[in-house]
Image 1 (cartoon, rainbow, N blue to C red):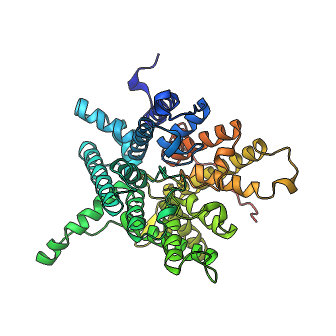
Image 2: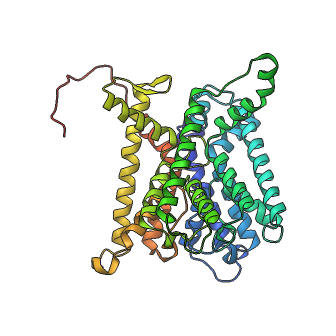
Image 3: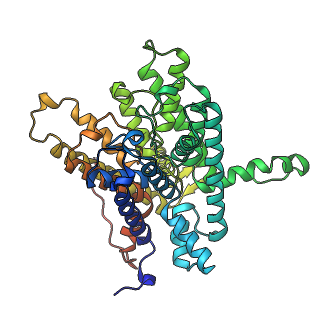
Amino acid sequence: MKTPASIPPYALPILFFGLVILTGAFLLHSDISLTDAPISWMDALFTATSATCVTGLSVVDTGTHFSRFGQTVILGLLQVGGLGIMTFTGLAFYLWRRHVSLSDRIAVGQSLLHDPAFHLGKFLIRIVLWTFTIEAAGALLLFLQAPQSFTPFSALFHSVSAFCNAGFSLYSDSLCAWRGDIGINLVIMLLIVLGGIGFSVLVELQECISNKCRRRLNNQGRKLSWYAQVVVKTTLFLILFGWIAIYSAEFVGFHGNMSPKEALLSSLFQSITCRTAGFNTVDINHMTNVSLLIMMVLMFIGGAPGSCAGGIKVTTFRALTAFVHSQFKGRRQTVMGRFALNSESVNKALILLVFATGIIAFATLLLTISEGGDVPHPETRDLFLDLFFETVSAFGTVGLSTGITPKLSMAGKGIITALMFIGRLGPIVFLVAIQSFQEELYYDWPEENMLIG
């Protein structure tokens, strides 16, 4: 029998995520969590997984189907999932033992920071304090702007859901009622961005801002690191690209029943929420196919490492674009700004791309079989895009949907549940787990050329 010390560090988040999901499913299935109609064990498991993995996909209406106790359970799952089980585990080890083994320290560090050399205890305490402070400030701003709609509990629920990039809402139409409200939109968008850029970048931004006065006094101060600059610049680029692209696909020459202000605001909101947040201020099912494809690209990329967001991460996207650019330039190195990526980072980015693409393709195939594999194509013309969108949303832990989620079969819900779990842990854990089983070779194979392309 294995002792706890013999459990590999990368297996800890898998075990704890699984335990939290099962506990949440049991609580959500109980009568005290429901307002009236019972839900199946699969729906309870689906909801618990979606909340813990901060995805936001729902098979039942959160605001009407669950009681205040059930909504509180979901809120707790969102918070635990957003901070990450590894964060809570590392903090518990630190407070209990005042010491964490080197392997645990490295494991937690790889999931939170680009550099594992850091002081675990102080950093984790800082994460918790930062998170609760930002969420409390967001809840207060929501309550002050719309106290009739955002009660104290509702404001806190939506603030936590936004910062954790979850997208769970107590309203059946998400945030469509506030489509033209600049204040509500800005608060939610800011919470989403702050929760999606990574805790280490948040800390650096705070230090950079606080040092402005010092730079004015003695011309000194800390600037953002190369890593933080890559995250911030790539994040801003993707937000701007998504804003322009979605606006062009949806509203250029035709605003429908929206004013130009609402069209611009809705486009910006959807570009930001695709960073794995899952809220929406427009009906996703009525958007153009071009917009859905653009949103799938953004959902696939996701947010930054060590954040509440999912996807392959903005650093992976930036590494891949730099690699392609270097190949066109004929460079031996993959250059990003003033540094070149080492071969290990480039290889991880390529492997992660193949891993994510393969998982999404396989899950889409399974969903196509389970949700209409025996139905002729003319009768399911729109189904494939809906399933593909749902798959990317689940893997990227986004939570946006064209409305097909409640209609999924039992097998379909099981596939999406597994996909949310893999998507939340995949970029952080599964790649490390696969590589940890490989033994380092101390010899080279003879090389040979092959005709490619």
